[in-house]
Length: 355
Image (cartoon, rainbow, N blue to C red):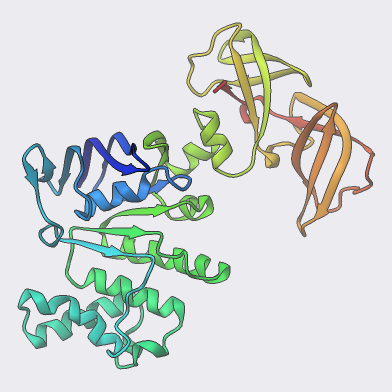
């Protein structure tokens, strides 16, 4: 449904030219929810705005639904791209009702009044706001306003939906509720969607595919499970959730397992890339939840910090000069300074090339 090739976009700032997007390539299947994820300034919003036609790329090609939107000598303006976009700001008209806000998106297209109302009510039904159709827009909660903005994006029957950090103005609890709603709406509508966020939990929860960006480039892409459980880069392991990074060197490669020499002892792990060889400087990534009482890798230390968090204890174990984050059983001994033995399976110890 969406194809991007060789996308580049630069901006002038302080007498310099900054490459916001530098040679980005990706494709998104029809009906999929793909998330552009990364830290501030990585180029994800600029990429989205190029898709929408709100920015003109310096070079590259964009095709949507098989039709070329951007290429050498070609630039289709945003109003002709048949896309629905939801911004951080809901941009709700305060003098209109909910129904009028949604139907207004069709007025400039010459759609008859009766048809506008019918399609607006269908869009409101999809976001479960039918009963509030006649309510004045200022009397809506933040979550309800967000649903109105989504309905307005849907009412034009777009080929795809674009979301630019749409939940950033909501409180933590409502963000969780709305991200689940967004996924439901996207699945029920069957539309392809591109979602921009810097929130890792949000990306993991709603995405069919995550495209992780840094400094204008794509670092890694894959399903949420792949990029979280089997990252191929240190940056990915660090950015998505918490992890322990232990420096070391490959001492031996045997049947897919690598023996790594570290300051904490020898650790057996796996290489997601299959490219590492003996003598390579590496980082061993171990998630806190993968350090428990099971596994052949043993790490010994003393309890430095522990916080009871209900079902688990969030702890920091000091191993020499290295601090290791781990999650222990909720009934674990929290005594500072006590000896702690942590274990991890080789499959949970990912060996990544040092960056």
